[in-house]
Amino acid sequence: MYLVTAQQMKEMDRLTIESFGIPGIVLMESAGRGAVDALLRRFPDIYHMKVGIAAGRGNNGGDGFVIARYLASNNIELAVFLLSEKQHVQGDAATNLTLLEQMGIPVHEIPDTASFESHQPQMRQYDLWVDAMLGTGLKSDVRGRFKEVIDFVNTLQKPIMAVDIPSGLDSDTGKPRGACIRATMTVTFGLPKIGQVVLPGAELVGTLEVVDIGIPPAVVYEVGPKYHLLTQNLIKASFKPRTLQAHKGTTGHLLVVAGSPGKTGAGIMTSRAAMRMGAGLVTLGIPKSLNMAMESQLTEVMTEPLPETPSQTLGLSAYERIMSLLEGKKGLAIGPGLGTAKTTQNLVRKLVQTSPVPVVIDADGLNSLIGDLTYLKNLKAPVIMTPHPGEMARLVGTTPSLVQQERMGVARNFATTHKVYLVLKGARTVVAHPDGTVFINPTGNPGMASGGMGDVLTGIIAGLIVQGLPVHEAVNAGVYLHSSAADLLARNKGPVGFLASDVIEILPEHFKELVEAPPGPPQPNSFIKTL
Image 1 (cartoon, rainbow, N blue to C red):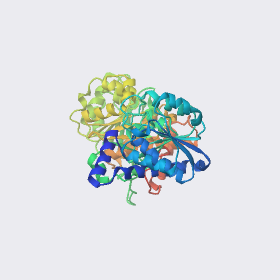
Image 2 (spheres, rainbow, N blue to C red):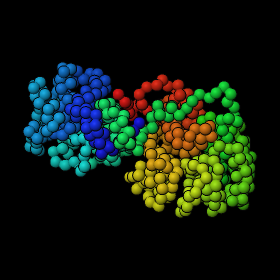
Image 3 (cartoon, rainbow, N blue to C red):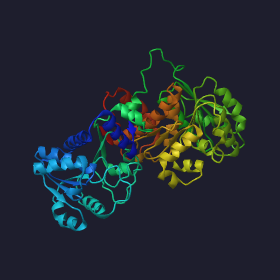
Image 4 (spheres, one colour):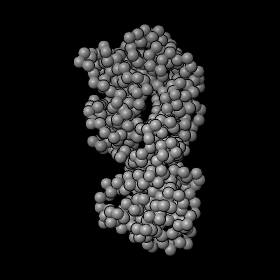
């Protein structure tokens, strides 16, 4: 599903009106009608409620006027509070305002602070609010009576439906511009906006529903958004049933290079995750002195004792053996629990640059590249990097807080500059592809904040790659499956306390649910629905 900026959505509206001859007032009508349909489904007892509609004088307010008309047609008691004088409303919004007045729907003008204060006692009487004050075109911080009304409506602690976007939310960044409505639900039009699915915006929109207002697909294609939302339907489309002739030799062989004293569990989890994700064979390459400990914990996974350093870690002495092991393999996962000794770093750098098969790099593998990214030049095979914000900050020479402030930009710039796949982990994981395409993952939960989750993700992505999925699909699917499996655990076990190993064990069951789910509108989870 595409994600758009405010400017892209504005351009789509313009092209729809000018190139396809669909009047703007028709788009406004479709938006308002769709919003009412969503509101009636969400609040079936709305017929016994009083609805207040806070409206601006622009097109967002015009959508609110259409909503008011349809609610009134359903015999729902309501009133409109216009944050302007009626004479300042223009265009399609003015047409719909006139229709309201002709229907006898009360419209209260609030052009200044004094009029707002006089209306406050009346406004407290409403059970549900529709926010149609400010739309996606917001360019500055909210001030004056708009700020006062937003703060007031929030303090009422009543359900709020935001029209297109919560007033005060930047639709491109997801950051509040001063005061911002905290919506119970948001009904957005055409396509979801980037700021609605990234944080903190995602927490302010409530449940997000997307209403199709008739933007032609050709218009969307012409504008060409580069940002996308990972959805269940998108991921499901990557998978096809295995043939009856499938065997372990046809479902891929993965080599995992991992482990050092005190960190043996990381390689075990990566290997098991790849197996649970369907890889036919997995070989775990480890320092030879750790082989017995690893072998005793693994049944389906094969182990390969590798030449080690005096400190029982892997170094350049293991390079030739690893390269020979890559013959016949379809992928390499490197880094979990590997350690950061200088010779280990040199091994990682050389393997990344010379591997003939796709490489998934995590943890100490990423740390090995810090300070010298020239090893990402002239790669022989695709490289997938999976940093958390701290690792990302070290890779680009900044702070985790700055990475978090510009997650999409940081990930996209790194991916396009170094021609790698970049998975920036965290809430709303960002997946950036070498061509600049960016995907946002809406799944996942705070219960994933525990050790080993990254090792599991590495194994899932690598396990999908060796089975033959195109790398770009494997990365997207791996990220989505990893965190949506954790969502299943949160529902079944509780919000905290489940382990990375629990995610591994639930993968087959979760994958079955995914591929057997009936086709339908893109609906990744309760966070967003398409109507």
